[in-house]
Amino acid sequence: MTIPPDSGASRPSVSEALRTRRSIRAFTPTPVPRATVEDILRLAARAPSGSNIQPWKAHVVAGQARDALCRDLLDAHFTGAAADEEFHYYPRSWREPYLARRRSVGLSLYSLLGIAKGDKERMDRQYARNFTFFDAPVGLIVTIDRDLEIGSWFDLGMFVQSILLAARGFGLDTCPQQSFAKHHRIIRQHLAIPEGDVVVCGIALGHADETAVENGLQTPREPLERFAAFHWDTEQQPGEETQ
Image (cartoon, rainbow, N blue to C red; front, side, top):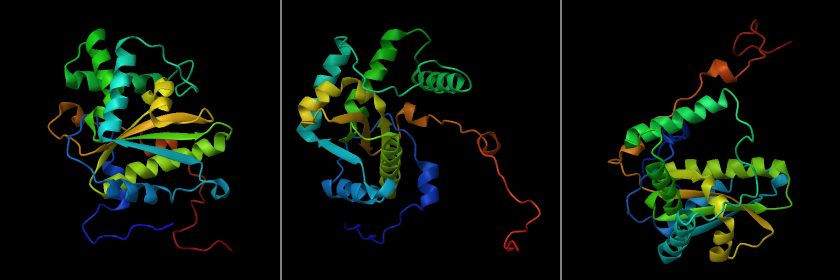
């Protein structure tokens, strides 16, 4: 595999890419060159996988192929076509602290957009924007072989994250979207995805519209002490070797 060479242009460090990655919900129509998308995918393919089996597949849509897919997905959404999910992404029974976090991000987004609580029509229209890749010029549909086990799904997640971070290296933004999995049958027809593959998610890829209020959403993260436990020899000083 060939990894694209660094052009020498100023690019964010890994730390900066992690800090600045965010889920963008409004993109400009500025085109993204196919060569750039290919470079991003080549870099993302360096993600680790058990025994190097590399279980990921990516279908890239742009131009007329993207537009045709989006039209059919929007039609399915607005005509009330039943969702047909092949896997459970969210908990079947919500509990704390996850429920509060979910509600918080939803309320924050709708507040920015001026959508009042209970305004189901506007909420529905906002959700439908998922199926336009939030107007991004490039969309990706990520799949995995149906017979692979949970470990390969872990690997797939690292591949997706690698796409998001590699995109930042090219000055681009993204939004990972599980919503596409709900209409996998339509996606299969457009992209000739076999039944042996599970449609896992989509990814919007492009340039963020910095004038869009929804892109001002800041999602908080839990402090380190809430999710990390250090089992550390506190008497050992940094740099010292254990005898």
